[in-house]
Length: 388
Image 1 (cartoon, rainbow, N blue to C red):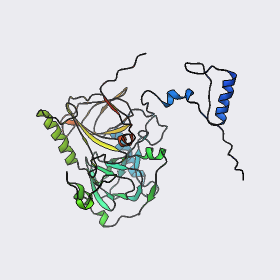
Image 2: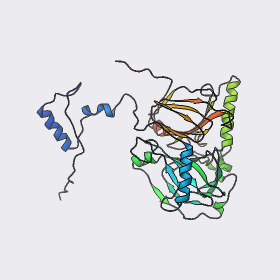
Image 3: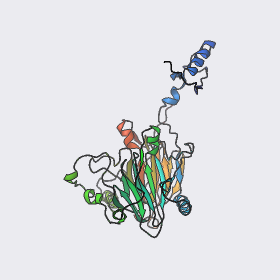
Image 4: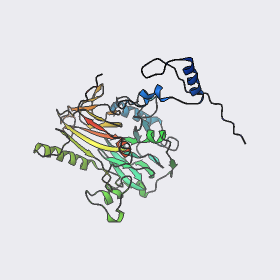
């Protein structure tokens, strides 16, 4: 039996051009190119510059979103858009201006503001996408992961590996907003994602509002692992990294620096990484999360990394420069650092706009993906331009 091939209009379009390292333009070459087009073939000599550049050239642009704008629009959505099956979440994604209107902050990362009204429940579901929540202000919401209610408070980082059932409920008398981060674009583009709907309602036990979740009681003890659960896990089993612990670690690094001991990554710049207590590696298989504290007057050296990152200002103010873009930032503002774009941060924070007196920033990025493929690179300082 003969299977008829579908009649495909070729999207390949080739132009014979005179130029260095190009074959002479002849009628025979033109005829060859028409044959390539019909057979859906692209010769490397016409595209090598696009496919194999000297360094990463991201499709994403540096961009900043102001928190006050995000919060205002999310609050208006709270009045107009119900939470329930269909939309599942009142989450509003950040769309990088160069990615064609897709809800992508970068080619691999999703970032969104999620908003939950008093008494509301976001229904249960699960997905292969790795996710987290980061709280820049407010409290009163509990995320319920695997039927374990986990409190969400200012400064808390709440990671959740893929395929864990989760829901949220607001037990307060006021709305609450936070930032979601997921690897949706990465999983979508490699065509590997799955999604399941869960229960429509949470049980009475899950509506409890404990000060500490079961995961914290088991895993939230620095340097100590429960022998009953000993062994590595792909994603962290600790569902809440408390702000009190993050703040203390940053404070101690800077105190050590002032005393003349090593502790910071550069003068005036403390940095911690959230890690999986079962492996000491990244907290999620595809997402690296870190927290920066830059003291007033300090400026970080320009840093380039392969892969992309999203930052949110937790406290304080300052000036951020990404590539050719430079912005004044303040609490809650979110900005994107595309692959291999230099980032430098100058702190202008003080006790009037920051509890720590410094510029505090939360960062998440796709470094674990690149590290697994041996593609993660970092360069600190200026890069000399090549001259020919």
